Length: 107
Image (cartoon, rainbow, N blue to C red; front, side):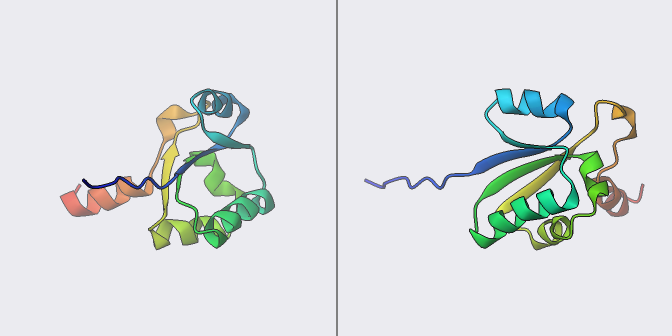
């Protein structure tokens, strides 16, 4: 009989007050409207501890100037990063994945 080993995965949302409340209600840890230092501190901790995490960020978080966010994006591995649009401007959502898909499909 095989035994299933589970590895805990942190669920973290980073973004505005408007969205953090909803993510907190569904069990996510949240970081509300961080500056670059706050975000890099949290990301550094995840990297140092090799913590498995699902990290969802509001698109506006890309503008805070985090040094570690790009590293996590390019590294892959134990931190899965996804983005959601801002509630204030949902029609202006652009994901890095959009550009990659356009290249692949010739769009």
